[in-house]
Image (cartoon, rainbow, N blue to C red):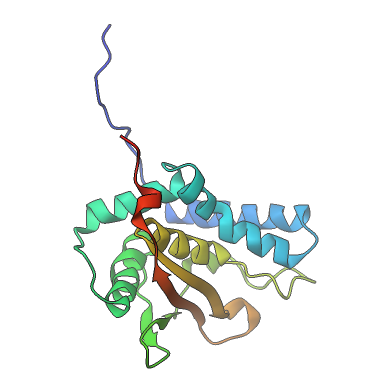
Length: 189
């Protein structure tokens, strides 16, 4: 029996509801494991980011590679263009929503993604008791920041408003910091 050479693994799409419920179970377990909300927030933020930087071909890298392969997006020339692509293409592709983009400063390096609907909180009515500073969807910030790092952009990504905390919308702030040195991310051949 021979093995096929250079066969790419096949990745199957998972049901959105299954993902949302599994994510909810993860957050619930983290709340049991960590006493402080800040520790849970850090873990959720870095859960995919650590795969981007340290494992190379981890979950996050595949997400960026998948996005670039499926979207056929070319090189972006401004932070505004990058943010529009994140909102109009990436969010639509992976979460089925299209956030509104607003620019928050005159230097055009701070933007907000305003989500009228957040699929990650579809089955969540409120934050657990005593967890008022928990950022339930911090995973989204880690994914955005990690994805930007994979295309050599450093950014600060945080939640500015959260429906689970009583705000009318969910708002994610993106502040572009600098372009990263590409040599650090190139493979040795």
